[in-house]
Image (tube, rainbow, N blue to C red; front, side, top):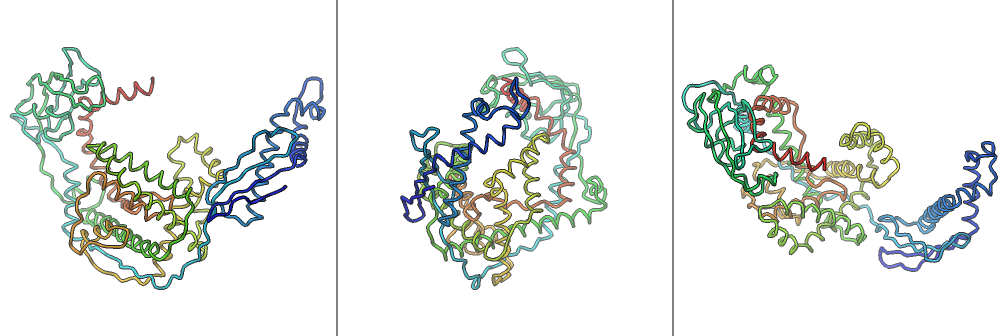
Length: 525
């Protein structure tokens, strides 16, 4: 095998590789010997088919397998002999004119990882901004749950704003009923905003037993195209009028949520709030840490890695811009700042490589047990019957395994660096902590007490991409801003959701059912 270097510029390398025909022929013979015992052919006993007939029957497939094996081995030798650390998979091309029996000539181009000296870890200084959880915040959290679990009691008289109307309704367009516009004994809370504009308001004044016809217009952007922008009528029959019942926040209220007492509820909610602020505290520390690392290290990074990272950020920005009120303006704004986003991508790649080097130099690793947990979590997004295939895919694809491992590995390196840093704890308000998180990545933090300015649509997307700069290339952009919720909150929220299920259901017939039906039709089509 002959390997000739043709390019050596910065992080770019290129080679021509010649694989002798004799080496490929030897591989072919090896493949034939391997499969011959399993080949079956009429007139021959199993395993007794002549080699020349095996080649004739499976020749093209055997040759392709032998060629692919030869190329893989050539790439392994190229990397090993030249002590290369490829940044991405090499681009390997088989030159035109190759055919069986000839030498295989390859052109190989790749980018290598830069040589990075593991930085000295002394001198890192971090502020740990902590936010004490106020009693008022806990009280507000309890009151929010009480509001979500609003109960209603039957009342005499007319329905007013905030009341619940139990009614039948039938929607018609040009006098003809339309799909998804009919329901019986549906609870509708006037003023909840769950139904299309104008529907709930026209229930004001109804009494039990009343019937009336209302007219509403579906929004122009309504998902069901046959109803979008159309004026329709609804025949309404009211069965019962209910008024909001007073919610007492006491031990009985806590027991309805599956807890023992109000004290237990407030304690668990306080713990959740403390966990959330602790997550924000870590985010601010991590941001400051990475700013210091970025400011102290400037080295070339592989362009292909930067381009891949930029593409990921850009797609995220495009998706978010398209969901804004004025997508065209948002797209125009991010397009004008495209160079800035490319710099963000370069920063992300540089930080990812630097953190990797620090982790390797200091023995930070993701254990096999942790990796198994990561794969198991990722497999949950697939159907049960497909999960085993996903496990096998991760085992066979090092790149996929690396993507799953990267966020946890980065967090472990960050935790290692925080332990090594000189940390000063300082108590601040939640607004000040949020301002520190939303500061630019140059490390500048808004003045204490100053609330961050509201962002324009595209700037909001830019902020999210900039947050992504504080993650390793494969990490999720805002994972740090989503601390896990305490079990109490989950239980309380679940109970509250169950209690208000009637309110959620009321949205279906007039507002959501047509869209669901259309989606189902689209899926079937």
